[in-house]
Structure formats: structure tokens, C-alpha cells
Length: 567
Image (tube, rainbow, N blue to C red; front, top):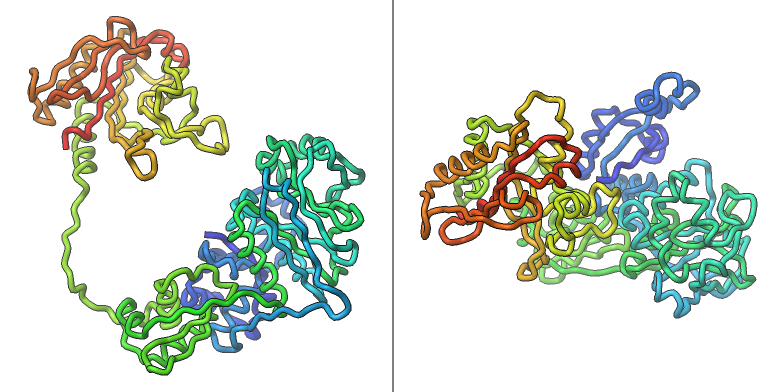
């Protein structure tokens, strides 16, 4: 959930009254929010960097409020205050309308075909006659950042640019050019750079370097010009310094470039509605019955009262002529309302979750553990009793862990790859538990020998027959690390597992092993395990190259089997 930090005194001033911490906590709960923390800038710096760094920091009390991830209209002080005021019925939900400029034509943003190769969509709006105080300016900038991190998915879907309209002139052009052809003075820099030079400059920037990957491999970079050829921005990286906004800015030009047009419209709606109430945006109307809400929430309220409850949540509602149906008007600020159930949830919130009467469920069900999880738990207990220590390793790993280090080809592993991994350590979903256990052994080499480790967890494998193109597979893996390979130990563990699973030795419905070749294991020291006529895994002594690549120095035996066939 996103967290919004607001100054307590500024919030109370905007709400028109003062609350105790307990009262405001209760108000947040009633409105579906959570007061997460009461702190100050000084406390935060002291906690993170020490008391010395905190000297001179502000003691102003901050409320950190957790907001639902889909309530983009509550990500700034202005939206939060507006929502609470309507909820407390101290004001009506605002109506948004567009006002054409008095002395000129509406501004235009022209999109060229070149943008299809990088970020094909753009939307724009103008906020006129804005008055910025320092607090309002800070809130405006913070809202952009919150939207960037939330609905914009760290600028990959949408990037927001804001400009002082009085320093530029339309019509504006959104196009894309080769990096060497783009040259401008970026925000807060002293000289001009080409786009290529900017990408190099920002590779060490703690904030902007996280967004470079979005366009750095593209043949052309997006750029927005005004009618005089002045660069407004190079989305999604940086704005131009020429058009930057300040406390003196009166008219703001907002542009949102995107790979997702729907998200771009949502973001633009949020920016203009949070800071100006004279803009015309699309309203939607939905019709649903009072009976639907009463049944789903578990209450028995009149149609008129339910309409009043929805109006408290900024959803203007009126009872229709039949007296049973309610027409609900959904404003552009409520992009989270996509289904009748969302409207029902708002009605329940306005009614008060604590006010809903407790009832006995009409249907009785007995919860049971999933059979696969139950089997896994039973096996864990018995493997621990056999002297093996359980390990829990990461579900994500590097390509090297499941391929090169195990002497495999990555194309043969059926691995699911992360499209934009944060680090080289988390590039793919693991296809085997063995690499994680060997890394655990390597991290505990100084422990007394022998090391006996096991893990029973899921791996992820590509599977074209599944809707999502992949499936989870529950596996059991164990390793034995000592001065001698200990193949007999791992073989004995396999026999014990089969005994627990009530599978007897033998062909047909029993289990048996036969020699196999596997690059991960030492030649002639690997066996394939068959149970009830199906191959379920392998055991053997690991290849010396595998041992070396995991920075181990002694022999190691391993067992890796699929336990799902035993369900």
C-alpha cells in the first residue's frame, strides 16, 4: 500500500478542526485508511542516520497514512482532505468542468508517427490561474512521484512532465529522434547535453538511473518541443530546465507520455482534479439495486439511505423512479470503481464495518490442509528425524545458478525469465532446488562436517498447456557434503522416503533405480529413479566441476525427486 506523509497541523487546518491522534486514527479506519505512523522529519533522520545527522531537522509532526493501492485520488494532501470532508458531509463532492481560455485558443499537442517505436501515446492538459504556496508546491511534486511509483509502474507505463506554460508557446510536438539529434539543457543542470551524454551522466544519479533502462536500448528517444523548438522534456527521464515550474508559476502545462493510453488518461485525470476543480472530464453512470448492496453487505437499509452512503464516498447517487434502483455517478477521480462490487464496498465503508451486524454463516465448511502441503509437512518431519537440516532458499536465482554452474544449457532448463531483473542474483525462477542448497552449503563451509541439508519446495517450469504458460512443481532435494561422497547416505535417504510413501522396491508399482547420464553428476555415479513406472528424479555424486563452481572443496551427493506423483 502506498504511504502518504502529511504535516499534521496543515492537515487539521485544511479539515477545519483539530483531532487527537486516537480520533484521527478512528476517522482513517472509518474511511478505509490506516494511520501507520506518527513521526517527524527529525525522528526519521535520527532513526536512519543517527542523532548527529538529525540536528537542525524539522520537529513538525508528520502523519504517515496507508492508502489503498487503487485510490490514486488520495495520494496527496488535497485529495485526502477532499475525500474526508465529503465523507464527513462537510462539503459536497466537487463537480469537474472544463473552462476554455478567455484570450486564446486551447493548446494542442501533436503526436508524430516516430513515437510508435518507443512510447506511442501522449495526453496533455493546462491548469490555469494556479497559486502555489511552498506546501502546495511540495504536494504537487510529491503527487507526481507517488503516481510514478504506483499506477505509472516506475515510469514504464506513464511518465509525467509539468511545465510553466508562460515560458513556452504552443502548439507542442511529441516526436522521437536518434539520441545524437536531441540536445537541450536538462533540469537543474548548467549546460546543454545530447541525449547520449545525458544517459551517461545519469548512470550515477541515485534517482534517475533507475529509469534509464526504459529507453536506452531504443533506436530513437521520445522528446517534446514547443513551437520555437525548445525542448520541454525527454520522457521518461528528465524535463528541460527552460520550462521548470516554481512558486511563481501561474499556468501549468501537464503532459503524460505512455505505453498504456488508459493509464495515461487516469494519471492526467488525477493531476488536474487534485489541484484544480475547473476541468471537464468523463463521468460514468452505473445502476444497481439497493437489494444487491443489502445482500452483499449484510444490512437492511432503505434505498434512500444507501444513496446517501454512496454520496459520502464521492459517488453522487440518486434513487430512480422505481424506488429500488440507484443511479451512481462515478467521477474521474475514482478510476478504482470498475465493478458493482466496488460500489458495494464503498457503501459498506460509509455504513461502517463495525456497524454491520454479526450473523452466523448459512453454509458450514470444514477447512482442510491441501493434500500436497500435508504430505510435504509429514516428509519434512521425517527427513529432520533422519538427521537432515531443512533449508529455505530463494525462489528466484541467477541464470548461472541453474545452468552454467550445474553444467546445463539455459535453453534446456524450461526456466521462466524475469523481464527486468533488479540484480543478477534474481534473473529467473528456479527450476531446481539443488543450486540453492549448494549455495547454502557454500555459506556454511566452516560448520562441522558432515553437512546434511534438504528442502521441500516448489520450482517453476514453463508449460504451454497452462493458461499462464508455466506451472509450479513440488520437489524434494537433499545434499550430503563430507570428506567422502556419501552416496550410500543419500541412497539410504531415498529408501526411507519411499518407505514413508509406502512404495515398495521393485518394478511395476514399486520403485527402482537405473544408471543414467547427467552432466551435473559424476559419470558412472548417477542413477535415475523410477516409481510406479514413471521417472521422478535422480540421485548421485555431483561432478567435480559443479563442486568447484559453487566454491566447495569436498565431494557431495544429492537427491532430487518430484513428490507430486505420490498424491
